[in-house]
Image 1 (cartoon, rainbow, N blue to C red):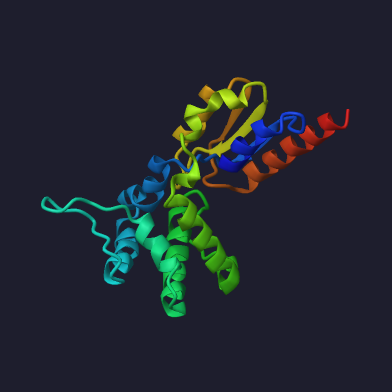
Image 2 (cartoon, rainbow, N blue to C red; image 1 turned 180 degrees about the vertical axis):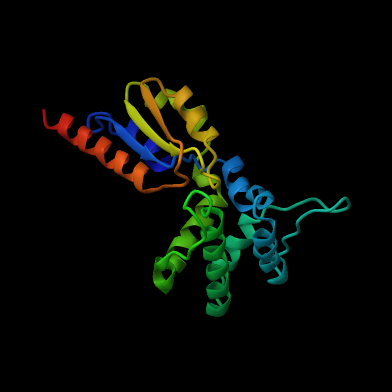
Length: 213
Protein backbone atom coordinates (compact mmCIF):
# COMPACT_ATOMS: atom_id res chain seq x y z
CA UNK A 1 0.00 0.00 0.00
CA UNK A 2 2.69 2.47 1.03
CA UNK A 3 4.85 2.07 -2.07
CA UNK A 4 1.91 2.09 -4.47
CA UNK A 5 0.48 5.22 -2.89
CA UNK A 6 3.82 7.02 -2.97
CA UNK A 7 4.86 6.00 -6.49
CA UNK A 8 1.49 6.37 -8.18
CA UNK A 9 1.24 10.18 -8.06
CA UNK A 10 4.68 10.46 -9.67
CA UNK A 11 3.45 8.60 -12.75
CA UNK A 12 0.01 10.13 -13.40
CA UNK A 13 0.07 9.31 -17.10
CA UNK A 14 0.70 5.63 -16.33
CA UNK A 15 -1.64 5.06 -13.39
CA UNK A 16 -5.22 4.27 -14.31
CA UNK A 17 -6.13 3.23 -10.78
CA UNK A 18 -4.99 1.17 -7.81
CA UNK A 19 -6.20 -2.06 -6.24
CA UNK A 20 -4.80 -2.46 -2.73
CA UNK A 21 -4.99 -5.50 -0.46
CA UNK A 22 -4.59 -5.70 3.35
CA UNK A 23 -4.06 -1.95 3.59
CA UNK A 24 -1.16 -0.52 5.59
CA UNK A 25 0.72 2.78 5.55
CA UNK A 26 3.70 1.76 7.75
CA UNK A 27 2.96 4.55 10.21
CA UNK A 28 4.64 4.44 13.60
CA UNK A 29 1.28 3.67 15.18
CA UNK A 30 0.85 0.61 12.95
CA UNK A 31 4.41 -0.64 13.46
CA UNK A 32 4.22 -0.28 17.24
CA UNK A 33 0.89 -2.09 17.21
CA UNK A 34 2.06 -5.10 15.19
CA UNK A 35 5.32 -5.48 17.14
CA UNK A 36 4.02 -4.60 20.61
CA UNK A 37 0.35 -3.66 20.96
CA UNK A 38 -0.98 -6.90 19.53
CA UNK A 39 0.77 -8.60 22.43
CA UNK A 40 -2.38 -7.78 24.41
CA UNK A 41 -4.11 -10.45 22.32
CA UNK A 42 -1.22 -12.94 22.29
CA UNK A 43 0.54 -12.21 25.63
CA UNK A 44 2.38 -15.51 25.95
CA UNK A 45 3.74 -15.38 22.38
CA UNK A 46 4.67 -11.70 22.73
CA UNK A 47 6.47 -12.37 26.01
CA UNK A 48 8.68 -14.88 24.19
CA UNK A 49 9.17 -12.48 21.28
CA UNK A 50 10.16 -9.53 23.50
CA UNK A 51 12.34 -11.68 25.77
CA UNK A 52 14.49 -12.65 22.80
CA UNK A 53 15.40 -8.99 22.21
CA UNK A 54 16.01 -8.43 25.92
CA UNK A 55 18.27 -11.43 26.34
CA UNK A 56 20.20 -10.67 23.15
CA UNK A 57 21.64 -7.57 24.80
CA UNK A 58 20.05 -5.05 22.44
CA UNK A 59 19.19 -2.59 25.18
CA UNK A 60 15.49 -3.16 24.67
CA UNK A 61 13.32 -2.69 27.76
CA UNK A 62 9.59 -3.17 28.07
CA UNK A 63 9.23 -0.25 30.41
CA UNK A 64 8.49 -0.01 34.12
CA UNK A 65 7.43 2.68 36.55
CA UNK A 66 11.11 3.63 36.77
CA UNK A 67 12.29 3.09 33.20
CA UNK A 68 10.61 4.24 29.98
CA UNK A 69 9.67 1.72 27.32
CA UNK A 70 11.82 1.52 24.20
CA UNK A 71 10.54 0.47 20.77
CA UNK A 72 10.98 -3.21 19.98
CA UNK A 73 11.34 -2.91 16.20
CA UNK A 74 14.71 -1.11 16.29
CA UNK A 75 16.50 -3.78 18.39
CA UNK A 76 15.02 -6.47 16.15
CA UNK A 77 16.38 -4.66 13.10
CA UNK A 78 19.80 -4.44 14.75
CA UNK A 79 19.82 -8.20 15.36
CA UNK A 80 19.09 -8.83 11.69
CA UNK A 81 22.06 -6.62 10.76
CA UNK A 82 24.45 -8.50 13.05
CA UNK A 83 27.74 -9.76 11.63
CA UNK A 84 27.14 -13.05 13.45
CA UNK A 85 25.13 -15.51 11.28
CA UNK A 86 23.87 -17.31 14.38
CA UNK A 87 22.40 -14.08 15.75
CA UNK A 88 20.69 -13.31 12.43
CA UNK A 89 19.32 -16.85 12.21
CA UNK A 90 17.86 -16.79 15.71
CA UNK A 91 16.33 -13.35 15.19
CA UNK A 92 14.75 -14.27 11.86
CA UNK A 93 13.31 -17.49 13.29
CA UNK A 94 11.88 -15.62 16.25
CA UNK A 95 10.32 -12.96 14.02
CA UNK A 96 8.84 -15.59 11.68
CA UNK A 97 7.19 -17.35 14.61
CA UNK A 98 5.69 -14.04 15.76
CA UNK A 99 4.41 -13.36 12.22
CA UNK A 100 2.64 -16.71 12.11
CA UNK A 101 1.14 -16.06 15.53
CA UNK A 102 -0.45 -12.67 14.99
CA UNK A 103 -2.05 -13.63 11.66
CA UNK A 104 -3.53 -16.80 13.16
CA UNK A 105 -6.98 -15.45 14.03
CA UNK A 106 -7.87 -14.29 10.55
CA UNK A 107 -6.16 -17.31 9.00
CA UNK A 108 -8.41 -19.78 10.80
CA UNK A 109 -5.80 -20.98 13.27
CA UNK A 110 -2.07 -21.11 13.87
CA UNK A 111 0.06 -22.70 11.18
CA UNK A 112 3.66 -22.23 10.09
CA UNK A 113 4.20 -20.51 6.76
CA UNK A 114 6.16 -22.99 4.60
CA UNK A 115 8.11 -20.13 3.03
CA UNK A 116 10.05 -19.69 6.27
CA UNK A 117 11.83 -22.99 5.57
CA UNK A 118 13.78 -21.17 2.86
CA UNK A 119 16.55 -19.45 4.83
CA UNK A 120 17.25 -16.90 2.10
CA UNK A 121 13.59 -15.89 1.86
CA UNK A 122 13.15 -15.69 5.62
CA UNK A 123 16.28 -13.62 6.19
CA UNK A 124 15.46 -11.23 3.34
CA UNK A 125 11.81 -10.80 4.34
CA UNK A 126 12.51 -10.14 8.00
CA UNK A 127 15.51 -7.92 7.34
CA UNK A 128 13.54 -5.72 4.93
CA UNK A 129 10.52 -5.56 7.22
CA UNK A 130 12.47 -4.55 10.31
CA UNK A 131 14.64 -2.09 8.38
CA UNK A 132 11.71 -0.22 6.87
CA UNK A 133 9.57 -0.43 9.97
CA UNK A 134 12.30 0.91 12.23
CA UNK A 135 12.47 3.98 9.96
CA UNK A 136 8.69 4.51 9.67
CA UNK A 137 8.80 3.29 6.08
CA UNK A 138 11.10 6.21 5.19
CA UNK A 139 7.85 8.11 4.70
CA UNK A 140 7.91 11.64 6.06
CA UNK A 141 5.49 13.22 6.39
CA UNK A 142 3.21 10.20 6.90
CA UNK A 143 1.08 9.11 3.96
CA UNK A 144 -2.18 10.31 5.50
CA UNK A 145 -0.75 13.84 5.58
CA UNK A 146 -0.08 13.89 1.83
CA UNK A 147 -3.30 12.50 0.40
CA UNK A 148 -3.68 15.45 -1.97
CA UNK A 149 -1.11 13.66 -4.16
CA UNK A 150 -3.59 10.87 -4.80
CA UNK A 151 -6.50 13.08 -5.80
CA UNK A 152 -7.88 11.96 -9.14
CA UNK A 153 -6.51 8.39 -8.93
CA UNK A 154 -9.37 5.93 -8.29
CA UNK A 155 -8.69 3.07 -5.90
CA UNK A 156 -10.31 -0.05 -4.53
CA UNK A 157 -9.15 -1.06 -1.05
CA UNK A 158 -9.68 -4.57 0.30
CA UNK A 159 -9.35 -5.29 4.00
CA UNK A 160 -10.42 -8.04 6.39
CA UNK A 161 -12.54 -7.20 9.41
CA UNK A 162 -10.64 -9.81 11.43
CA UNK A 163 -7.21 -8.45 10.54
CA UNK A 164 -5.55 -8.37 13.95
CA UNK A 165 -2.13 -7.54 12.49
CA UNK A 166 -3.30 -4.40 10.69
CA UNK A 167 -6.59 -3.21 12.17
CA UNK A 168 -9.24 -1.92 9.79
CA UNK A 169 -8.96 1.63 11.11
CA UNK A 170 -5.98 2.33 8.81
CA UNK A 171 -7.88 1.29 5.68
CA UNK A 172 -10.86 3.33 6.87
CA UNK A 173 -8.77 6.46 7.46
CA UNK A 174 -7.06 6.08 4.09
CA UNK A 175 -10.40 5.62 2.35
CA UNK A 176 -11.92 8.70 3.99
CA UNK A 177 -8.92 10.81 3.02
CA UNK A 178 -8.78 9.49 -0.56
CA UNK A 179 -11.41 11.00 -2.89
CA UNK A 180 -12.57 8.42 -5.41
CA UNK A 181 -11.59 5.40 -3.33
CA UNK A 182 -13.83 2.45 -2.50
CA UNK A 183 -13.33 0.33 0.62
CA UNK A 184 -14.49 -3.29 0.56
CA UNK A 185 -14.45 -5.01 3.96
CA UNK A 186 -14.46 -8.79 4.07
CA UNK A 187 -16.20 -9.74 7.30
CA UNK A 188 -14.64 -13.19 7.57
CA UNK A 189 -11.03 -12.69 6.50
CA UNK A 190 -8.04 -11.39 8.40
CA UNK A 191 -4.72 -10.26 6.93
CA UNK A 192 -5.57 -11.90 3.64
CA UNK A 193 -7.69 -14.92 2.84
CA UNK A 194 -9.04 -16.88 -0.10
CA UNK A 195 -12.24 -14.88 -0.58
CA UNK A 196 -10.50 -11.54 -0.32
CA UNK A 197 -7.73 -12.67 -2.67
CA UNK A 198 -10.30 -13.73 -5.26
CA UNK A 199 -12.11 -10.38 -5.01
CA UNK A 200 -8.76 -8.60 -5.35
CA UNK A 201 -7.96 -10.67 -8.46
CA UNK A 202 -11.29 -9.77 -10.07
CA UNK A 203 -10.77 -6.09 -9.33
CA UNK A 204 -7.35 -6.24 -10.97
CA UNK A 205 -8.84 -7.96 -14.01
CA UNK A 206 -11.44 -5.19 -14.25
CA UNK A 207 -8.72 -2.56 -14.07
CA UNK A 208 -6.70 -4.29 -16.80
CA UNK A 209 -9.82 -4.53 -18.98
CA UNK A 210 -10.51 -0.83 -18.49
CA UNK A 211 -6.94 -0.02 -19.49
CA UNK A 212 -7.41 -1.91 -22.75
CA UNK A 213 -10.41 0.12 -23.84
